[in-house]
Image (tube, rainbow, N blue to C red; front, side):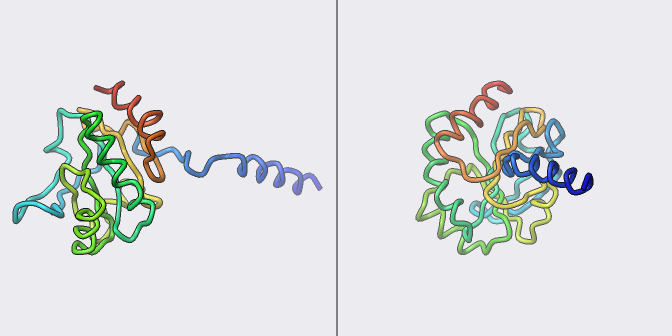
Length: 167
């Protein structure tokens, strides 16, 4: 009986947690090193976190096959223009032609979007599901992670306070 009660209490406590509130092992750690081709841009263009040192930026992990990603793209376009925040994308396990088509239709909030065709960089970031958004500080450290789509409320209440704090 004691074992059953113990398990019931642990289960009850676990059910009270928000599954989107998972802590990232990367918080306060350097961004994983990557060197990926850019989805749209000059032939041979690549994106590396080292090239972004010295600025605060967001990394938004997305895919054309992801319905919440489609919904957040216009919001990201509007919010990044309003607040002047650089957003870089990580196109996760997607087909480049479909990803480019989505950006043409829904809007492109990204300064550049790297192609993570096999998902290895996503694994380095500990991606659970797309979309996910990371705030990266000027020293290249992950300062915040948001699981799920970005809404105006998420942008104003969660992302922007962290961006302002690290600027």
